[in-house]
Image 1 (cartoon, chains in turn green, red):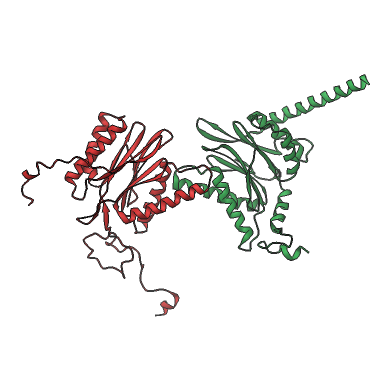
Image 2: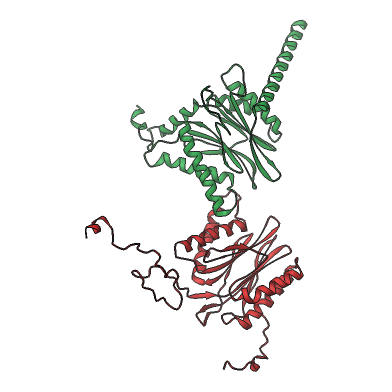
Length: 262
Length: 258
């Protein structure tokens, strides 16, 4: 029944839905997970690495994390070629602003400009929407550290912590439980990111090859975007596993006590 | 000709620069024009010098209130200073119509920025940068805004003072003077600044008033009614128009210009 209404992106279905946009979001649900967490002194971005083919050439900066300008970076989930078009446009928008005003673009304005473009593809032109959701991390002098998420409909929101891609719903509910509002430090955020990622990735053991971790912080009045070296990721994973083991131990002891007392 | 059916008019480069005829001078040009003049390159109603100086805690910009129509002192109560936003002012010398056009564009731009409702507002440097791009772009298209603009502001605890003109030249300096002021007022401004690098607001106002007085004596396109725009931490204040005390008692001694 819906077939008649979903061949064109720019029309509503009888139930008032935009099928193409929903199908795009469906595509993203199968893509590699991306996770963002806001801390008091920075932002953490974690991305699942899926291109782990042995024959693939070396990656220099990052596979899924794109630097947009000096104060912002983003990660994508969805169709990679669509994502490349959008990240290129984001970079151009940022540079045009810097050329005009000799100042970096405020984070929300950059997100908003791109989302207007994404929205246009859902209302006219007869072209399909971009099958990409984007997580933006950035700093500006008005609102400090910010985390935004946008989707194929062109809608965007500011978040304290969020997730897109495969198993994102499970990740978001986990973040909702574990995230301590106004009390997260960078270390807390990194640990939490590893914890959530290890649950949502369908691998038995988490290794640095499977996940990319990046941080955005401020140092000496300058923004620093850093992709963590695999050694650091390894340490975080180890710490996480130790905590897991400790929690397991505690649980076992508790059970023993209860058994003993009953 | 056969070429015409493909839309080729036969002109080598229509509407473009003619060798030797890049700028049309007020006196008229003797080089042949290709077709009718399409852009007006003659300024009409003009404003004379604009002055600006930084002081301790802010910046003050001054301009007289005359719009000259050639040698006729035609409009004697026009404002050549505008408030851009709470941190920036702009004063314009040169063609008054172009200044008015730019003022409208800039006012709308500030409104559009407010409408975003994101708490962001343009810093003086951002306005200055934008204006430089606009002026340079216009000159590159051979349709300049025939002005010398002075931007003054206060942002992040520091005063800002910049200059942009019709050919896209842009720079920042602690003292700025356009037109006749560049010859007569600039030495006075620089000397005062050297003697007292951190002058107070009242000293800065007195200095500019002195310069405006000298310009009134000596600039044939000036007028003894001017406005000051002051920008400090507290915001923008455009003072009521005032005049300098001019002393013409020695005028009768000047011979030879009767």
